[in-house]
Image 1 (cartoon, rainbow, N blue to C red):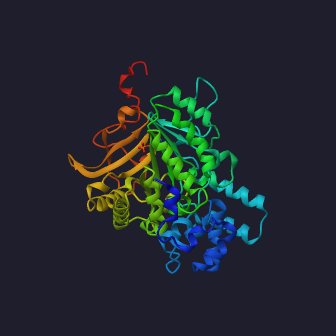
Image 2: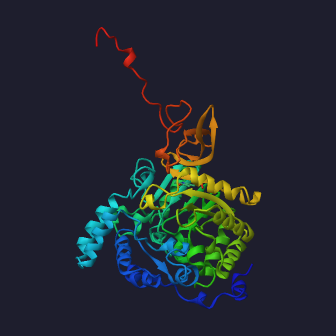
Length: 458
Ligand SMILES: *Cc1c(COP(=O)(O)O)cnc(C)c1O
């Protein structure tokens, strides 16, 4: 197909569509929270939170996605704007005091870093557990190889997003702390690694958001992979369809980007576009519809995923609407995630029992075409753990679980059980059920040796 012709005949794109990207940062926060109707103290508390956690939004999100009449309760507003009570009150008032006194930048940073360090900035051992080595050489920066068949790659230029989600589990890399970052500029190493490891069939570009990179940069990462015969799919994990669909319609490099997707497909690989959509409101604009149509026109497959977040999308009806709309638009629902154990997790977490109810309440109403979705799923250190149900076995109320992904591939798909706990919100809150001493991904606890000790010699 001719993309240039396609762009010319694009239906009714809104007048703001062609405008260049404009970012809003913490400098604009006071003005924007005033627009949401917050009072002086609340606005200061929001600024305090944004001193610790990253804030960034753009003109499309501000003008087209947020319903300002409903702010600050609007889910799109809550998706991108820090909440005054997202962090422990003592931390917020400590920073608010410093802001009130116009404390020097250095002092603010020092206190902000102390608070960040308490927020588990690198869940699932992100910095140290997953980095592969090539023939005993230095570990590869910005690469994770946790599951046999898939490698994650974090391009150096992809370490930001078109806007930041308040709940982002990668928040630490956006706060200007060099040693909390995790990125790679080395595609040659990746290609060599893939050739040495033919069991890897899928490379997942992630970040940040790889689609923040211009076509000229991203193609330098993607093109060399087309030569790797054993590679079956190239995935791009991105929120750009939700936060800046212009990237695929009216941006200067939109057409070139689509041509790059076409080249991937022509090379005989699947270009899997992993779109992060948190709420059905993100699917409503004409611009998104046009972006989806154009991406699908390249032969790429769009799959969708998002975490379940308290106060943003914690209702079955929201997920049902999202999955139905996605199927209509030709996208494939993929994962519903559980909010990870990092950052303001206490604020956003939905307990596993409730998460399961929300998932099931939506899943039961959609057609089989939307039941490609898996969840609620926890991306934890041993792998991705899915909550399959809540039931009673031999008089004991239990969670039924299985690993969708596992470091130890033999465990994938095997069911296991945990004691039911209404409050449990993460894997480490769970205990083995039905007399088991440990979960399948844990090693057996040491046998109790006390009974073997000879009492005469003790
Ligand atoms: C989710 C994830 C993947 C991909 O898993 P799929 O189930 O194939 O989507 C790969 N690596 C890591 C570290 C992940 O968290």
